[in-house]
Length: 237
Image (cartoon, rainbow, N blue to C red; front, side, top):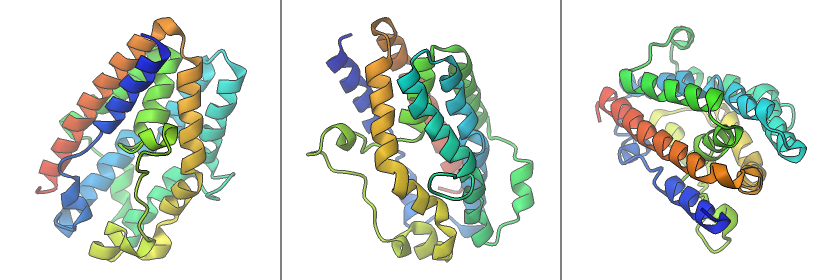
């Protein structure tokens, strides 16, 4: 697999990262009393531990330039010291807090079956696969969207960024705009983080690891789709 084929294979995986049920969440069709299921599962599956997942790639990466990009990501996620001012997992809890949910639920979350399978796969691939697969899974797949082609191709449409007052949680569920601090932080660092993520994976993945990285990303995509479908069903979609 040559560099161009590697890049295109990864971009196609990212473009397949589309949840067919997500429209129900963004249009307010999910019953308010079931919305907590989505937030709890996201938090437990990866949000709370995202800095740890990225750090697993960092500690095994042999390239100083790539490590610097990875550790900057870890530092911002873990501390908020560059942009957000608070750890990103803590800021995520501003969503349920602003919606009046019981935050005690977030200290003892029971993962749904497909969610548990997905998290176990994330752990397996970030702990035991090549560091480049761990980097791709965390910084490309988990952080990225189906609009990631725009990071590499300025003619591709970027991820939409509607005004914060149009955020689905604000518009349909009454979340105060001030509780979107994580959304604001993500928007502030997204361009730089996306460029750094693609640079690390495309530049430093060894040629013999390109196909294994693509296979790992396909596995993660399939597990993510199953997980999101299960969450949608549990939310009454």
